[in-house]
Image (cartoon, rainbow, N blue to C red):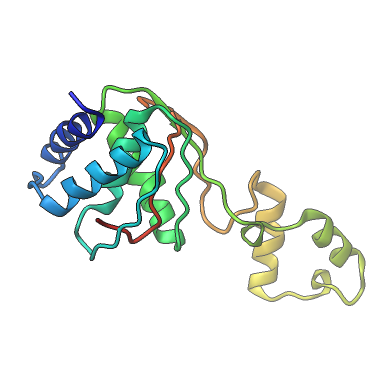
Length: 173
C-alpha cells in the first residue's frame, strides 16, 4: 500500500470519527494524497481550497503518519489555536501513531520582562499609570510563565510526533 493510500485510509477513519459524523470530501482526500506524495518524494505542494474543505486534517494526517518533523505556519492565531486546541488532540485520539507538538509564537506575542522592569523604574513609565490595561499587563507579567495574551498551549506528548507539512495555510490541490 502506498503512503498516499495509507493516508487516504487514515483520513477516512479520522473523518468518520468526527463528532457530527464526517463525510467523504473528494477535495480533502485529493489534498491529503498530494501532501503524502510530496512528503514521500521530498517535494512540495501548493494547495488552495475554500472554507469547509477540511484542509487542516488533509495536511495534518499525512504529516503525523510520516513521522517526520513538521512546521505548520498559520496566518492567524485563531487557526493556530484550532490546530493546537482541537485538531491535533483529536488526531491523537483517533490515529494510532504517537506524536508530539508544540506551539511557537512570534516575539510580538510576548512581553519583554526586562523592558517592563525598565519602564516601571522610570518615573514616566507605566508604573505611575493606573489604566486597567497597564495594571492587567503588570499583573499578568508577574504571575504568568509565558506572558502570552492568550492561554499557552504546552508542548503535548500525544499519540503521534511533530511532523513535516508541505502546505501553506489555505492550500489545496
